[in-house]
Length: 369
Image 1: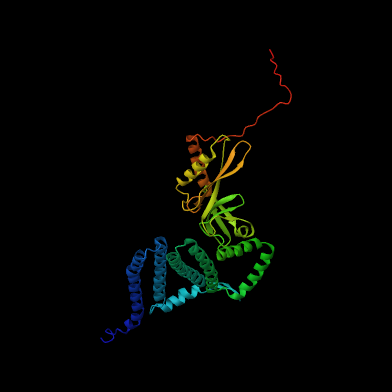
Image 2: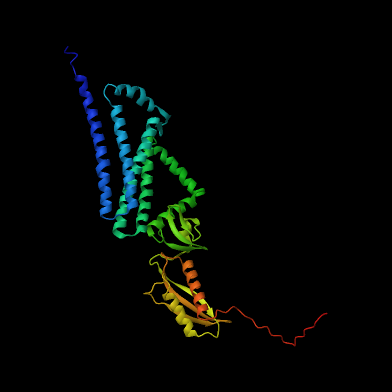
């Protein structure tokens, strides 16, 4: 009877069950209260909503994977069955698929490596978003946050990659020959890739070009929408994405219209007939500029008389605009429309080229029946 009342077999079960209960309790507490408090914190300080949504999503994923690992670990070490699991499952998974001096890869090490990569990547994403939210809150500059974000991501990715390789069973001994082969490859075939990679980091650190800048390179004019470590992307006014190698942005001359100050001055040429009242033309041009919304009014507006042309009096309207609010081609087009219609209403003639033809000798015209 005493043997039947012996509950000693329960004692080893208490610890894993306790760990499992605590883990589940912590998981639900964090999901229910911590993430809600985090959202309230975002609303209280009016922080970037999209960034915090990404933080919460990544934290959710991290909590899910950590709970999964805890449950698996408890089950694998559960009393009375752990020996069988160790013998028939774990030992089988630990059999090396590749077994050399430098590489020892098994199914177990592959799973361990992939899980390590995923968890570290999630932690990196959370840190990136927290730093991004902080920088946006402090400096209110999105381009600064994006630059730091890219640097953190690619630097962390290198370390995560090597840590994951190490957990998979690939030792540093194998990386040395790979580095040597890579060096030879760089010398013969992929120097352009490395050049673009280094140029990308120079751009990110030097910040001569930032996301949101309007640039001209060659015949291409567009807005920088992405800066990678190898290539950058600009979007033209025709919604065409142009992917440019970073080495071209470093090695070639380009115009950054919003490098330091996005406020620039544009020149609008216009010609009028010789019979026009030049004062009226000047006042009309200045009036057009003052009535245009995107023209900055606290900057000087000028209407210059440039020259006496072959068939017109040539003027130039000079106005200041914020290129981040309106691109140069659209601003020029809008002002040209206004100039044309206003000149037409006020009777100011915009001439077209005319040529008088003079004959040195008398011109005879014969009628042929």
